[in-house]
Image (cartoon, rainbow, N blue to C red; front, side, top):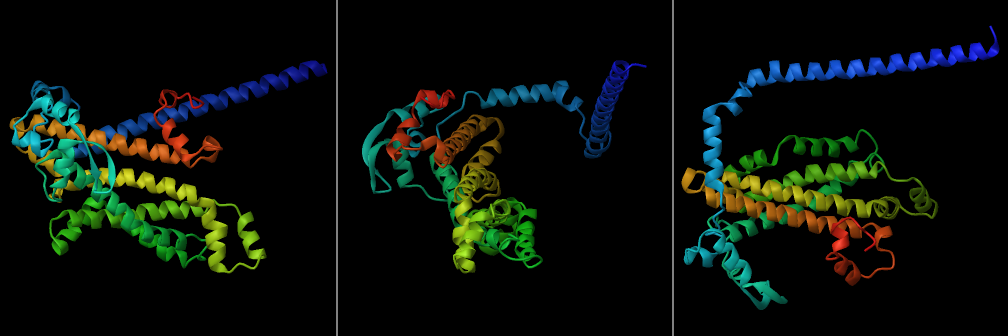
Length: 357
């Protein structure tokens, strides 16, 4: 056998081995998917009494069509105190609200051109008011924001102390375990825990969101600290820095932008949580939507208006936080002022993905 033939045989043998390995991987994936589907359908869904035929039978389809017909078109009569008092219904209420503007002061300090009826509604808003959409939306955003701000200091403390780079194992696990315990209990359950103590009020929702923030945000802070570079830490130590200086200038300085980005992410989540908590009666959009859905056909169109507001709030917070996070990427903003960055927010090229325009 010639050397060329031996080489060809080895190549062919290697090719067949790779082909068999590929077939084996594909077989394992297929068997795994089949097993997963079987387990889901024949064990879990069967245990829960769920049947896909429930989605396709005539009764379900009739109820679905009736529900969708009740939602459309959304009725914005409850959008502001003006539209509610004047009984302006449907999309006309939305148009009247968005088309009436005047100069004024936001929160008494920020001058500008603001929508008149929205500002009047906010001026008389009460935290527990779940009958006017703008007031309920303000309650939701305020609860999510306040819970994030109040939870941030403890999340930062627990996040730093939970890192093995700061507190050696197993002592750091005291803080990691505390955060894990908090995360194990959903925010809605924290609300149920606080209600017997503080009653049913928006403040109870804020406490639940604050507690949830400590567990979730603190864990993200800890994970970021575990991934930092050792160089800056050694530099501070070699310069004679004490423990606090090592943590502040050697560790936290490396993760400042990441901490801000994660805090904005948690703010988005907390706003959604605030909507959910409203179902328990603590106020906000969740309470408004729940009340309207409880009226069945008579309230579906108003509930749809509340859902539109929910989508608007979530998209707005996502938009603002994504732009702030983009600002934290130095490579995207070298040599640019804050005014340039604000102007860039409204550049069409930004929204179409053409970052250089």
